[in-house]
Length: 131
Image (cartoon, rainbow, N blue to C red; front, side, top):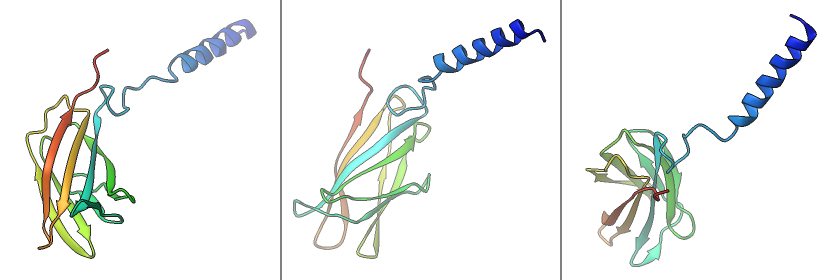
């Protein structure tokens, strides 16, 4: 390959790589194949921290923070999910069904009652903002 051809090819590859830098479409909420599961876990209105939240279908898990908040990636291919909460070494399960395909964020508010049950207080399906 001639030197000028080699330099042209290298320049083309560099321009192509730079132009593709921000592409991919896999980021959450932008039309990729993932979305977010977000929520808050409380007991009598107070946040529960350090509880494990796990999605059975993916194996993904997260710990609640000091505000009781959690966030996990969730494939858009799932229209129903089983969620495990581990609080003080006890497991509690919830199911969220009928998740629309165009949802960017599944937001849920959950409470832990005095009997030891986790209750789904509310669930919102947040769609991506229109361009």
